[in-house]
Image (cartoon, rainbow, N blue to C red):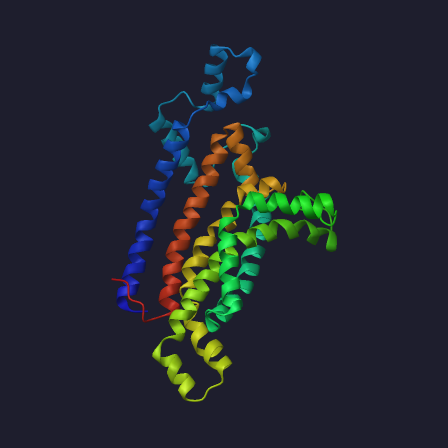
Amino acid sequence: MTPGSRAYIVRRILLLPFLLVGLSIVVFTLIHLAPGDPALAFISEQAIDPELVAQVRRNLGLDKPLPVQYAIWASRVARLDFGTAYTFNRTPVIDLIRARLWVTVQLQSLALLIALALAIPIGVISAQRRYSLFDHTTTVGVLLGLAMPNFWIALLLQLLFAVKLGWLPPFGSGAGTQGLQRVAHYVMPITVLVTAVLPIFVRFMRSSMLDVIAQDYVRTARAKGLPEHVVIYGHALRNALIPMVTVVGNQLAGLLSGSVIVEYIFGWPGLGSLAYESILRRDYPVILALTLLAGSFILIVNVLVDIVYALVDPRIAFD
């Protein structure tokens, strides 16, 4: 790692707390300026009384000026106390997140690993056989994968494999089941998530591989008489994977935030479904905690990606 790279990474790390504070201000302000009053979630529509609404707002601390509310909330967040959910049986927000975090991380991690395991060889072969039938088929598949929305694929899978064929369970994470019964609950959600990121990984892998195999050192390796698989997988692939660090880093945000659409459709009890439910209920503490955690995770991952870049390729200089 060059001195310039080290200085750049140190600056990024020192700026990170200020970025997190700015993120918290923006998130807090936007959520509280959004339409709707969370106090109405505690009151029946047939018995709305202005005095009762005002009392509920006082109990929730929503009657104070916005800067005061932010100061109280930020002081709690600094101690990793995200408050108590307005709904969800008045459960502490950190307990809600802790109960659903592993389910989301497990699902997203499996989907990410499977997508990488498929995208790397597909991208490499597509670059090797440029403009071949395999390459054209891959390109069409990438375009279709990018064009098809997640919810549409999820509903089609449910209709085919759960309703028509009855092979897979339509909902749930399979908690309490074991073996193939547990695995069956993962098939459709992971398929949808893989379909969403696989085209992106394949496209970048193919593009990166095409750039690398056109370099002089690859031609030199071939001129030395090295076998093609040694040239591709021993020399070219290692450098072609470097741009994939950024792409994978961007997708890592899903490990924490989850996929709201996929988790909701398949009844997956993760952070994505928790976010959806909290938005419907206007549960400010839960929405704020999930949004802040997801945004913070993205900022931290971006810094880590820069560090990994400098480690895997010392030639990269940050000016």
